[in-house]
Image 1 (tube, rainbow, N blue to C red):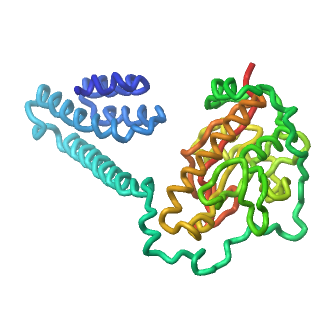
Image 2: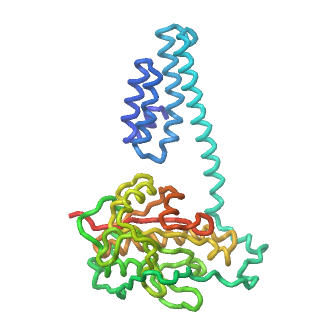
Image 3: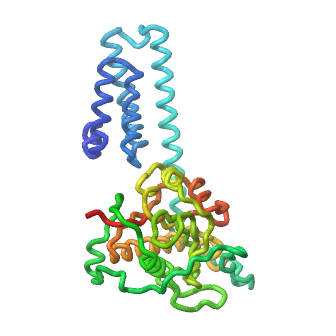
Length: 349
């Protein structure tokens, strides 16, 4: 596949190709870097790979252009030659970093595999009789917000066929707040308890490997009727909210944590799920992490379907700054950290 054919498969990068072509044509190695900015602005996950492809073509084209005008690259003035060499070195650095990242990605594939064979040689903490880690404690004197019981009266689309058919990722919001009854429904759909609450909730409205349910639900509330703006944590046993931090100005911080995806920060409500891996490791050791990833998908899909059913929309967010998102909810980033988030808002129109 030629460079042009490759770029033809990426419509958002066509503009970058034109910029690069024009830059090389005028023999200006400074301008030839403009395509990097264009790629960055495109927001493509594959930008690094395309950049690496363009790098080789850029260097070749630059040398060809210089040979035509000056005879050989070595005939270029000292300053220009130094700039060309510096640019080439930077390009090589991009290629090297890209190769290292690709190797890292390949090494991480093992987490997707079923490592249950390891359990035969592992005396898990469950087998050792170590108590299961309890439910997260609530600080004394914390502000508690009671929620109404989940009520299907908030459902606008009650056909499972229609809900599935209408499910989509939504990245812009219509006017209007989320009602407390709707929030109650969404929380019930994603982490609502059906029974088995002695010591640890085991039966919920989403499946979880071994009924471990390693997640905590946090909410960034901006516009929910009857609930003060701020960070709240959901308690599924009590079906209520605990105020973590009042804050009426979270839009900027949340947008930054979501890697400048402003529709996350502007949403009236954002779900943030953290994971406490040990809850699943306690039983499954090295097999726990694949289970946790699968379980997070159950959370997200139930939120998609429940939001669709009440006339709202959501979008699962995997691209976020881990440290910044952990800081928003105040977790340590080691024994508990953010694994998934999803803004919720009214549909337009």
